[in-house]
Image 1 (cartoon, rainbow, N blue to C red):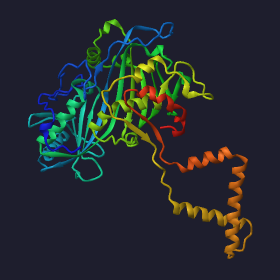
Image 2: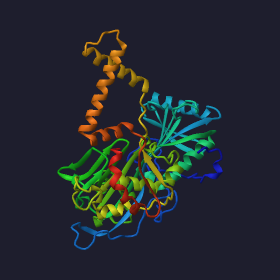
Image 3: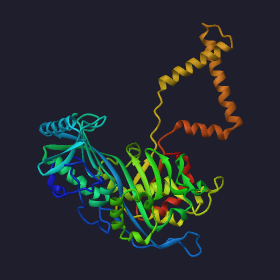
Image 4: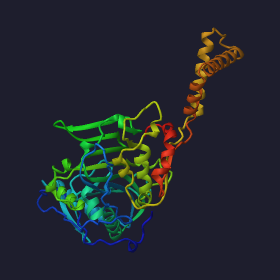
Length: 454
């Protein structure tokens, strides 16, 4: 998406992201809450609390203290930008403030320009010269050209600000600021997003999340987490696509300000001691690139949220009601009632997306040279004359053909399996989305093992 006219964006002149700093340094800006979180989902504003739903049928062993409610939103968002500046006056001012910070003892200094207020830090990062912060919102900027391969800026929105005032409001405010300061967004790419659902009223201790036999998942890594022998969470996968399920109340004990915000969002009293279980998928750029729907911009991401969520919860990972029989009809295992609730989360989007593996690029020239070397070795072992090309060629051909036919005849199944694996044409992970996305996916499970792990 190329943004040139800020009039089409929602102006947020009084935006104040939430600060995570309990005691900010002297003269440093500390933001406050901007507005109350909406309770009804709208496009681009998915921090919603659903109606109470009873997911536990009579006779179930799962214990709940009340009917569960669901709140869903982004919990982290990173977006890279390619910016074209009219001149470098803004960058020069950042450089001046950065040098002032480096000459003193402060880690950062406040900086105001055209009504926008940020903290400029004394150091940047490996790819960015300047780091601007406000609460848990970070903007990284460098002096590279906008037509290069490396982004010239990156916006990072933390957990609290994703929920209030909201990731979309902060995104709009940031783009407005860029336009006001003489910049143009020529390209935009979503680098990382965390999609999360909070289930209020269900404890992680009442779910079989730590039992691997209750999981059907593409990830190989499985890590339960305990603190003083108390279960705090479990993670599946690592890096570009991973799932975390954890006790949100336990996490909030470390941050009073954050706890107050989330209790307000959930609309519950902390003294009621209600459990809250967080389900969170971390999705980074390399995984987003594998989706055929071209998830590049924030608008693209919002268009595919329901479909993306369905892939994560229906095809990539499933929590089952009973232990999974790995040898017989794994795909027919019934989803846990808790997981059915997670799958049914509404993100208010209507476009479908497909994930696929890319074809492995093999170099025929290099493979041919390897074949020549092996063929010459086979001929040498047969004591072929070093200059008899006909004998060398015949022996090489005979040995290879004998090996292929032997494998084909002795283990036809293994031969075909290995040939299919070596062909490695792009394989679809499954198309998800639409009104009946959850029901339509169950018929795909039988073939889903062919796609391999994430």
